[in-house]
Length: 269
Image (cartoon, rainbow, N blue to C red; front, side):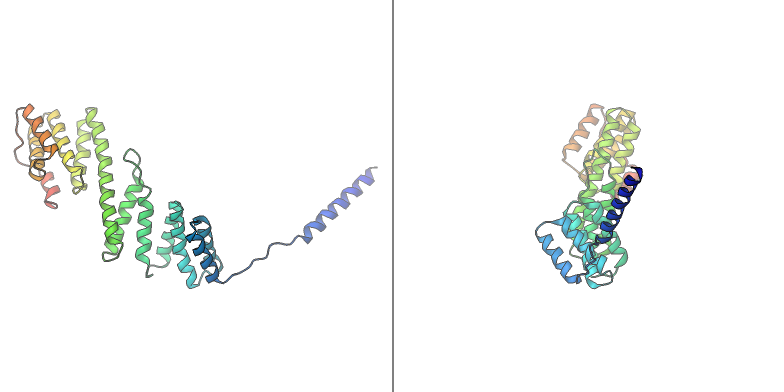
């Protein structure tokens, strides 16, 4: 009985081995690069971005040294971007920039990388690493390719990015101000004035400095901040608020301006 059972098992094993030996692997089929590229473009036009990216990657996999592979690298990055896979797009663009620094579309590669960071900017309540990276990448585009067709849009987005970063500083500064941590608040508001001079947050930052300095009893600094605010933003609501605060304290917005304020504004006004 035992021998019969062993024999059956042996036969079964032979059958399995025989079956496995007859299974054929799917053969590797190399296709002309232009055919794969054309198919990828068709998928891209149909908004099938994931499939398009895979096909563009396939061009490079099958024909890594062809002219089509270079084109496909850049198009794969674009497909990832359109598919909202920004990290994949950035990886592809970093590689393209490293491999083809002199390519005729290198300005577009830098621009698309910057936009991939830009699209990941979160609200001012969250961490701003993506915003910082977007700022650096946009500055790269403007500095490297000032005459490029992408420079103007990069400049506009750079302004918005800086405004966003200044907004983050203001949010933190207001937090400290509300809780009476005036020195920490002053550091944040001064950073807005020094690092983000052209943003829309500067008038409020100056006004908040007036509030902080008055709270600390440093009247001359409060007067100076209000004077700068009145000189550069006369008639603004923030200046009117600062003037009212000073009047309540029986002082006027006048006096010599601290050197750090002069240095911050000399380059802008």
